[in-house]
Length: 414
Image 1 (cartoon, rainbow, N blue to C red):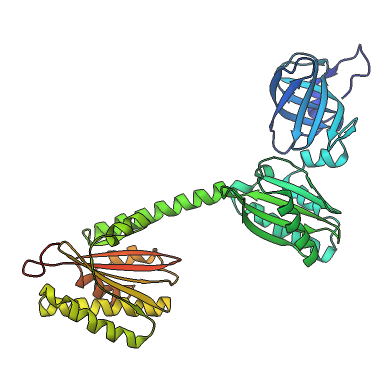
Image 2: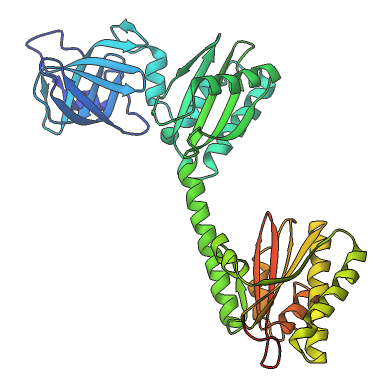
């Protein structure tokens, strides 16, 4: 790419065609040019690269510039006379600076890492592995990158090489916020174990989430890919929240507002923070259910429920406690009275209920019948016994709240 003959000009089309061993990067990326004589800044897009020169989509005055290509790799370049029109400009590389070392051209490693695809980088990192494990590890790494459409290239990841106690960022997209000590310890563990390792971790601020993959090369060196999956996880969380909102709206509409799903803690707190407590108890074994049922029947006598209502409420409480004991191993029950409402709260610390079953259950004809209600007869009994039924469930457990209006003639409003 260098113009060794002052009277001869290099044709831009020849450079772009690859005649001078130049190669297009797998992903064109923006760079900043700093003019050496006055510090003025310009921007450009890397279009073509060779060990001795680059082509940018840019419009800068002739002169010498400093460009940071990746995290710790800078080049000093000067413009070259070219035949051709804007927006492409060609530059000779006069100096390469990396980790305080200076060279006259890009090394083979630097050139390959700037121009290789993610699959080529993986192949390069694993080429020294034993043949019997090489393909397996390569496929594992490629599968992890390809399984999300957002990870089809490594531009949202950093690739590291660890060798004899030193860790080097090879791609240097520069966004990773994990400390070098943490990354080194992760790679050392993989080296010690002698096999491919994977770990999901959060940085010290709690803001960024990373998917780490380490591959031992030999007993002293390893390669590592650190993928920032924060945006992917946040998107999944938003999609999940929207999905739950749809379930809530469908179920509430199908039950005329009688069955309500709770997702947020503040929604739950509003139901629990007010009212006078009638009683509370722990359920640790099946025998506790009968004891608590008898206590409940005694406590609600003051509300003057009819015999049928009292029976249905007692059965509903029994079913809620049975479910909590069955799915959570133990449960808690609390009954309180607020204004003209009796609330029965049963909670457990099981694995929760699959929300995907709820719309089907509530939308089926005669869903309150035991033979049709997919969540079981117990839930059907609770639904029929209450005026309003609240449910909060996730992987931390389930909370069921049965709400029953206390009619005139019972205890007065508080």
